[in-house]
Image (cartoon, rainbow, N blue to C red; front, side, top):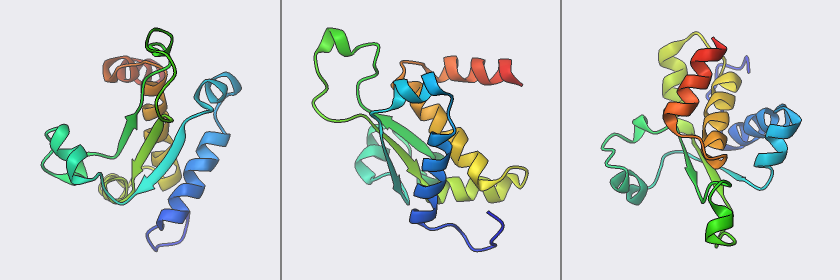
Length: 132
């Protein structure tokens, strides 16, 4: 985006969908059932559960049972969801200044889809470090 106005929730949803559509086929197929939701911030209950005091510290969240554990637990009670939090992502985008907003949204989305696939934060960081 080249517009200096902060992207709206709808803009974020469009950029997240574009990032999802650009995923490699097997990755996208594995993530296909995930619902992507855009909110300004995580809700108070989520922040409290994660022991996060500053809502700007959480840019995204995966909520659901990862696909590696589904067989042992039976069908998921509700769809898996990836939350992208607009205001913290915008804050990081402004602070960094070295990455486009679409690229940052894609990064957070892919990170959270990694959790859907059963990867831990350490796994995801190791993959990112290897890619660099």
